[in-house]
Image 1 (cartoon, rainbow, N blue to C red):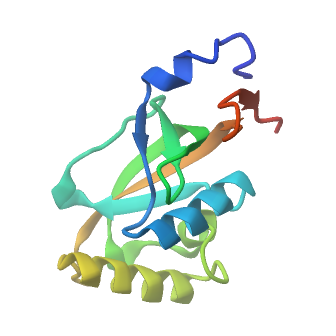
Image 2: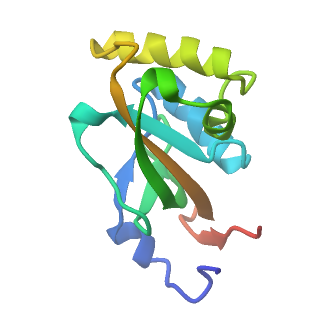
Length: 144
């Protein structure tokens, strides 16, 4: 499933967002998406469902420059303390272990003022559809 037939303007109509809560974290996480390491993310269920399976998004870096198109392939709810090692690995952060994931996300949700070991999360898995060249804002389909 390539996006080659789609015009460059199609991605411009998609919702856009940056991962994380700072420009530095957004840059780091966007880089992991482009490297193919980050294939999942999560957020507090109290924020509501932000996506559904099949939805395409534009990922922006820490400077709000569009860098990629992703597509949601799975969306589940689970408690923070029920997140498993496979999901932690797919988030692609740190050393990709569950222990590393728990530390980083406890810190993140703590900064948001929402952390609780039994908090409910939306856990999303996604796939990289295309890279967006930041210079010409051209779309390059991701070859899997």
